Picture 1 (cartoon, rainbow, N blue to C red):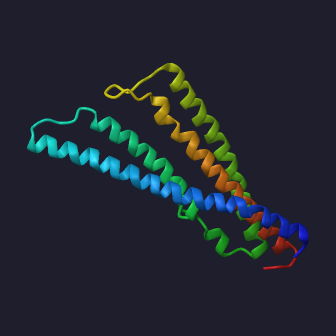
Picture 2 (picture 1 turned 45 degrees about the vertical axis):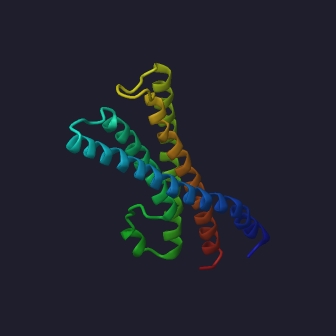
Picture 3 (picture 1 turned 45 degrees about the horizontal axis):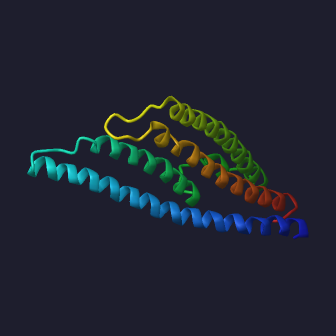
Length: 178
């Protein structure tokens, strides 16, 4: 292994530590959001059936929390490699082609995430600038929509790390390694 190759992997160590921290933090944060959403919905059920009065804002707030859970949950799944993948083509290809296709797929994911980040950012900023506020609680929709750019930036961070790792593996394979 050349010094340049070792340097590129050592360069990733701080990024991998950040990834590990983000994974743990997001897992805890999403768990807290899930508890909050469950408490809100359960409280409304209890109040409606036992006290004959409901919480008028429960549906909107629980929907907003659920949106954040879904987007941040997608980030957690990507960090852990749990997203669905079509790898049938990779099973039957030689190692050099397989690793080349993986890097190509990584680049396509990065391209899609850049487009998603820009679109999500534009939508969130437009919503904030419009002053559009939820009807039952004073939460601007732009705040709810900020999960789009946040999650896509986190996904882009992970995709860049994976692309660097996969490119390193491809280079090693092309030099005769495994």
